[in-house]
Length: 327
Image (tube, rainbow, N blue to C red; front, side):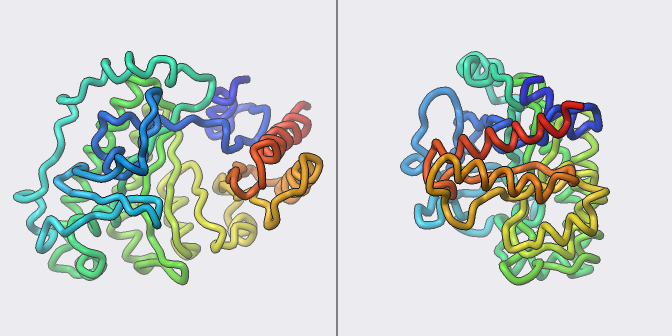
């Protein structure tokens, strides 16, 4: 099996050969999509300097500035005074104006891969509300009855747009994997209660996930923060996986919900291995810890001390998986 075939089999409940690892997917963010330039996350065949060229106008009339210390972009100023203005003041980009065939031709060698071709939707629902208003205003209006209908209408329109965007990536590039980006919490707690989350966000995310699955896309939720209390809601949407952050207790969550959901776990050494043999031992130990769980392993190269150590960790995780599922 190729990494792409194995990943689809893993998530679709078919026979697979190993538990997916970080390097089994390849991210494609072409610069012709203004949102990727604005968010400084361009990944394509032609080299692109995100650090110096990131920022600028993104989707829905929102301007962004790249902040080097944060390694990402922040919106410059609110577009709306309140969410009721979105139909008048929020322009919806026209996807037909993008030269999709030209992008595919220009990046032919990049998107021709045996890995799962992945792309990201920046941003989801609450983050988009923040970028249109401000954090304080978005948090307040999300729980105010006076704005409930306006927010649902906005989130419905965003869902329609995101589904259409995903369909273009599937049609023109043969994409396999989409990440929807929507942070829901701080280091200490979620931004909103599970009840508000279930009422205001879950129905729209569920529709997005359902349509992506219909297209044959694997769907990952990127959501930072201490959001353990929102995980039952997240699982209910049908999302395929969620990497989260180390501050969430994945071991506890897997005990509670591991039979319902394929968690992504961070296979990052606390201390960088001294050599390749140390990297292999670390990988075997963490694989054994999650041997009985259907999890995905993510690992950050910088945590391993060297590219050789990182490769050893990834290769060992795959080898252990192939041994486990060989029968």
